[in-house]
Image: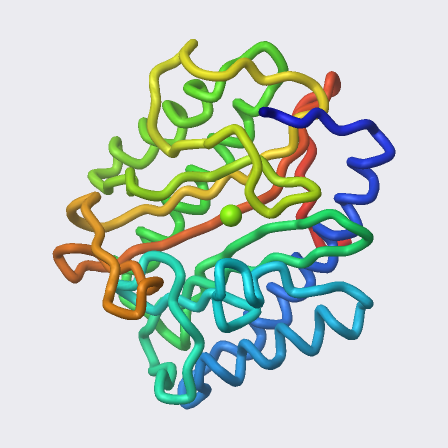
Length: 250
Ligand code: MG
């Protein structure tokens, strides 16, 4: 069931989104060669808690950390670890949620660790831009398929693939609500978008196959062919005045 939010609720979600976004910015500042993903997770948790908020992911379905940190061929759900030390040239996808006064903000960004290859830069740029193509289509009277189609078309025109096994989602008082928001789709198909819907749009884009597999830890999701992946996400409100990004730092 899709839960429509009032303007007042959306204003609260903007606060949660601001905290999530600033936590992501802090995480990004910490990305450099020699830093472990666990150190970054600690920065994220402390930052969120200092704002009087709660890390949305910590303990969610028993996830053991505050951030998902996914390096290179890891698409999503990388578990922060003292053993995962960032190296020059890595691309580092960080996904963060914060709950504040009962509502969640959810966002992700792929950061470059030092100088990265031109191929990695191109993948990151295309993935980030595809998110904004999706957001442009998060308008009332469109359907979910219009968002997915816009993302998919943008990505595939650049010879990359969109992951099918994981999708974006509604977000609000719960981290994951209806509807699903796939990064692929058919224009005019799927749930109709209405003012008051709040959704996380989150393209997960790969250099090679769209196929992924989950490692034995039950979380870490990697590309099936070992090639790079990137991931960007914003929480967005559908309003009568168009889409509003809720996960902005200011
Ligand atoms: Mg999400």
